[in-house]
Amino acid sequence: MVAARANGRGNELITLDDVSKHYPNGTEALRDVDLRIESGDFVFLVGSSGAGKSTLIRLLIRDELPSSGRVWVDGQDVVRMRRSAVPKLRRRVGVVFQDFKLLPRRTVAENVGFALLVTGHSDEEAREETERALSLVGLAERRDHFPDQLSGGEQQRAAMARALVSRPKILIADEPTGNLDPVTSWEIIKLLIRVNELGTTLVMATHNAEIVNALRRRVVHLDRGMVVRDEREGLYAA
Image 1 (tube, rainbow, N blue to C red):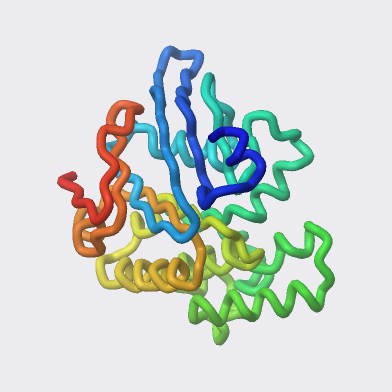
Image 2 (cartoon, helix red, strand yellow):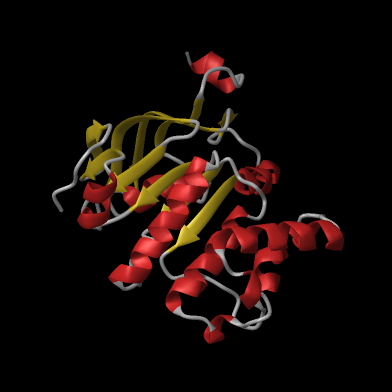
């Protein structure tokens, strides 16, 4: 099976085989994790603080490497990947963070298009893809505003547009509603559902049991670094 996935066959976009992560201070962040996420999935990654959610996400975008085990993302062996290949991986995996991480001195459009320009796209390509992404998240009319001129929800939409501008196969949302009020949180969730319905595989780390239980999507529950539950149409008792 491993060889088949590495050669791009099958429908799995993310595969973790017996993955563990240990830090020098003795922390065991992940233990013996096996996980399969197929193209088109919408997966909630849940668990208390320190359960291993953020570590797992960092492995998927190769911010870190596992202590043992193997990680495949879109057919690529992340562990054995050359450093020169990492930017290409990150164009296929968009990431949205809780704190937005927008560049304060650039407009919304500049924030969204920046990654395309630094990876060799022409000005015209960057402009077209930026307008598409801003339209998708409902921010076309705010394209020339700066981040401090936006509400929290609008800043998160801008961050989503930036993550989606390169048309990634996978979108990882790390606590995307953590800094938002309930009404705005649901607006972001509706947008994530739409992105998933358009074909993007979505992995969302969250503490929000209300959202998880309302949507009844796949739930992968981490506890002390281990996958203790993996259910379709799952619930989460935080």
